[in-house]
Image 1 (cartoon, rainbow, N blue to C red):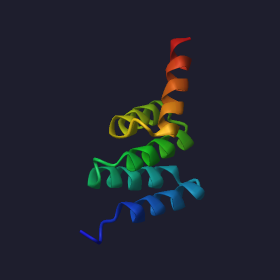
Image 2: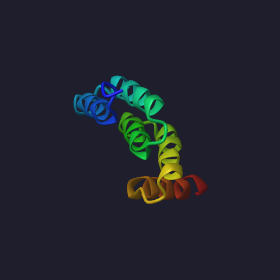
Image 3: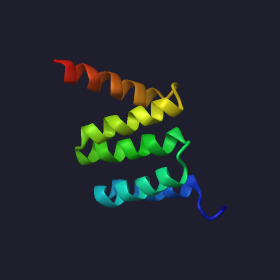
Length: 89
C-alpha cells in the first residue's frame, strides 16, 4: 500500500531516537521490519535503535540480518566485526 511506506516509518522512528525515546523508536522500527522484511535498511535502523538504547546483543542480531539482505551494508559490517572481536576476548 502507498500508505505504508518504509521511509515514513523510518523517519518516525528516528524522530523518537532524537528525543531519546528508545522504546518507542524500537517499536516503530519493529513494525517497519515486519512490513518490509526484505529491506536491509529497516534492520539497520532497528539495530541502531537497539544500539542507542544500550542493547548491543539485539543490535548485533539486527545488523546481521541487514548484512544477510545486503552484504555491502558498511555500518552493519563494521559493527558486527567489532562486536564479534569483542565477544571473543
